[in-house]
Length: 425
Image (cartoon, rainbow, N blue to C red):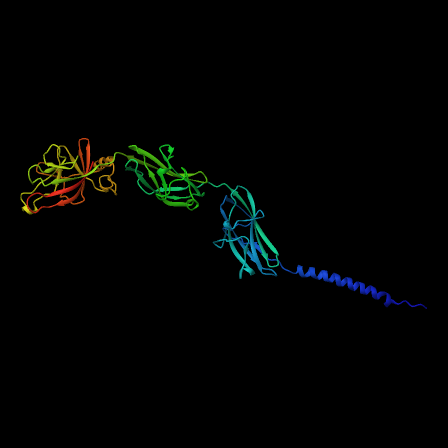
């Protein structure tokens, strides 16, 4: 009987199956090993002030998310933030209150094991809805992500503000340069230009306009602002005023990317420059022909001379000769004399004799002057005893003068005492 050799026939089949199984096991084993790697996790925490899901903000307004991550099989390597699939410029990102320096952001210990970050993103500038993706990648290049949808709307524009640090009406010599100090703060758009108009027209002669210092002329009018000034500035504009006498109106204004603006209107009174000269007024108790002063040319005259505008009050005979000079003055020949005092009678706080440069200011000094309240024996209005630095305004008919006492010279013998006076007319 013929026997069948099962071993001989089946063995090759077992060997073939074993080979196939080994091959499949090798492939399957690789698949199982990869499948066992755990990807990182990423999620957003729901807390007040942080976006979860979707949000509506104004264009270029910042929104915040609170990103929570943890590592899987491998340590975390980086975080990328994308807008509709495109990497967001790092200048629009703030991480835990600090501006980002890159995007994607490389991670370092201990963040490689997981972290919770507060991420602030400046939204897009157009009105639309965009998806912002926050993607974490580990060292095996496994990823996970989470996203929010941000819808932007055009918000209510906030205009810039402009504060003028001075008086909005003042006087200046025709053709002189005035300083206009400004404190400017941007609204919700960067500032773009600063401009100066004279009346209703922009000033075309750029040599009349300076910004920041006297070495920097406007490059145009309106003058474009550099980036350093676009969020605001505290600087001066320098303006050469009109050569023509009279009242001139100027407007200085700034505008921003919304075409919103802020401005200040300034009225500058330009007039005829003053004339400055010196005069000497002698003690009226001295020799005949002294004691009066012609304010038109500074010539010493008699106290009752028809050309005198002011006179000295002479001496007090009841006092010793060495101390009997009254050191008082009064008006003569129809002159009215007033004190010109800074901050009193309507005069500005910064009023000074040296600061008066045009005739219109001399008239204003008289109009704002403080009247005398003493009288002499002839019932004339007289000053108190004079001191160096005293300033007086004088009106005689249509003529106005400003007088400052520069020196008081007491002569011990005789009555040659006298004042040296600076006179403007």
